[in-house]
Image 1 (cartoon, rainbow, N blue to C red):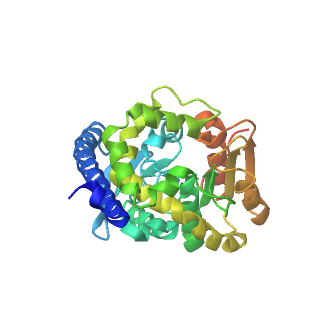
Image 2 (tube, rainbow, N blue to C red):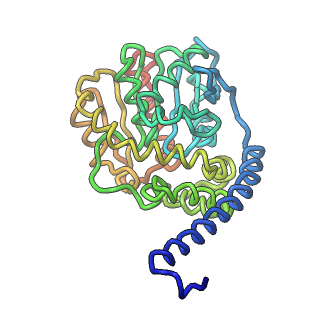
Length: 335
């Protein structure tokens, strides 16, 4: 039989079969290489804290600063496709003199296990993190949530406001937004996503992640040494990419459900947002939250991007100190 003897449907079927075999072969090669690289990335960036058991899984928790019971508890919740190293790079060191500082890897991120489809809901993530931090004796914490982590912090407060001291939201995603997510999130959520994740983990240079971080920080620079400390390879792992895509793609529905509940919040809320943030726009999110919640106070950083805890750490520390004071957990900060 020759190709000329095949009907058009038969030729199409043959071509699709060959294409499928090629894709499958590429996927096998990419997965093998990805597995090797992921093992290397994990070995170079092991857990910084301890793994706390929750519901038969593990949550990565890092503690620093003052002993339990001697200072206010401060919980740091990172953003999309991140890990707690984002905070241990600089911010934790600025806070550990006055707080017991607890940083966490959100479910499915860093060294915390995934709960599968369930942790697509930031409310489920908040429940998991509360359970983990109960194990380490956290009481009435000030919650600091960055970007996606702000949605988790808001869920925590909505579910357990009486047990929450205050919120500090940095470039926080809190409200429904217009338009679609970027191409990467749309593609990663399709059948081609698995192959794309394997190719990225298997072959993409770490410099590709550096370019992504430059866009996240813009217009502010990425601090020297941040990429190595953060562990860009951890974010490139296939499982974390899949978990992050699933969580981010589901976020719009969840914040749409959460928004009507915000006006009922009465705990102190400090909002810090750069007006040049192109990842999470201040007018779509923090400005609206400040309008809707009487206890929310907004600090806008002129020319600031999406990473205020790196570009303007003094402003963030001041917001945290104000929140702790407003919650009755710390003395009034010095002017």
